Image (cartoon, rainbow, N blue to C red; front, side, top):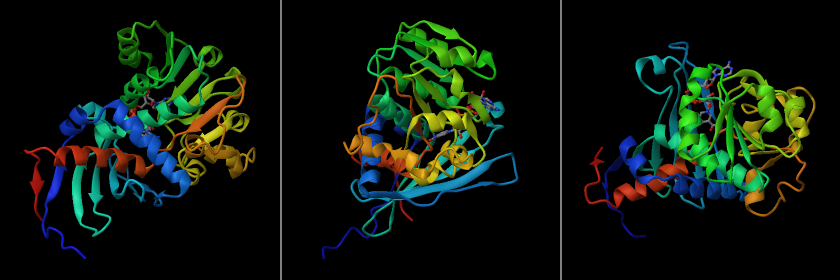
Length: 330
Ligand code: NAD
């Protein structure tokens, strides 16, 4: 057995490094590949811990896992502090630790805020790439917080959209999305949710809601929904009947039925677990995905630790190859 460097140091990957080095394309490729590995059984997520800490209204937890195909092992720790925006900070705060799968040594400390946003946007973009109708023209956005701008930019790259329509609890928050649509030369309209359901070919929901914002009857045939906000027990963005009507996909079944949108459809008795397919099966060619132009498809993107580890590993490799990489030694 060959000896290894006894103290190679820990690579520090700052938020600025991640922003400079990880493109939307890198993130899409890493996330699509890890979803495929999960569905093949080559990568698995460990149970999520997410707790209300009883301070600052915060949710804090850990997401971790191991990808044998990509050889990433680690944990993302952080959560959601709803009062941060008033302090000039983003509400999501997280950091990622990567470990050497061969020895267990800490390899890298990676800023997780930008990566969370790009990997979450990549997740819905992967679902649009594999499940939305090719001729989708109208993109509907529900939510306009920090994640929503990343979501919009990634989604616009997946189809030849001709218009963006949007709804937010506070309509004044929608200017960020309007600016992005306009940058792409697309018209932008603020609409009521019912109209959004009637017009949109693809809908992304990315809010912190705890009740359904979109009802089944409002959604026209052929729509693809990427439900991205529900990542905790009790949260909900769409009607359980809509979930039951749709051909439903998810990143991770165990999360969909406990902390994702799937929790409500299961609890209502409208569906059983076998209603929901891992999107990795579509990526791996084991499931056909959408099979008709009238089908409603829904992706329950709950957010898995392996997405974070996948993009963090790419960032750590790129930084460690730089001559001025920062290292600390324990
Ligand atoms: P943010 O605080 O910046 O924005 C929150 C958004 O939710 C805003 O548009 C706000 O108007 C809306 N909202 C809040 N309460 C609402 C309610 N009761 N009804 C309707 N809309 C409401 O948060 P963010 O960083 O943009 O994250 C949005 C959501 O996405 C959060 O719930 C977060 O936990 C979730 N998230 C999921 C993943 C994933 O992988 N699935 C990753 C990151 C964030």
